Image (tube, rainbow over all chains, first blue to last red; front, side, top):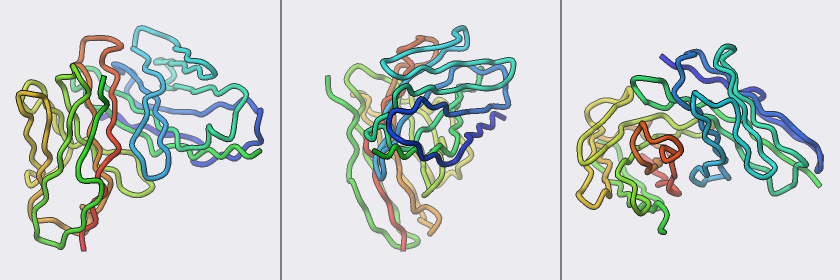
Length: 112
Length: 116
């Protein structure tokens, strides 16, 4: 059974900083991993999807990596802005069942 | 291209009642998944529908049931509501597994259910 952990639970940084959010998963036979952003009381916005055959994906200031052997994924945000403030969630989908398992998220605040 | 929509946005029910939540998939997507998100938690997978058939289920009791229609819209039904069912209910549409980046899930804004 896939378990997903996100550390830290909360993060507060000044504007302009580069930062890394961590996501750990227990089942190395992961099929894909997806990163999402959630604003308070809202649905999830897909940021990046990494297939098991890939090591990283990039979109603008975001870069996500996947290391199956260590059971880790990281989301790198460059030059953070106040508009990046939100909760960031990762979800791992195991091979076979395809059922996605979410972490509890990292709550990010970027202050001016 | 239209996004995923859900209705209603908010709902208040009492224990023991039944509720139906609705979801319209993003144009072209034939797979829909439902999630329950309690406050401060990540979404928990309820079930997934593909071509009107249940195609995977999480650890939820049978009183959580669903339907998918030929136009790929979907319903989540919950019977005999309990206080712990209070949560944000999210649906997500996508293409089915095996299609690479087209498996990206796109979420609706959610329905917030309060059970009193």
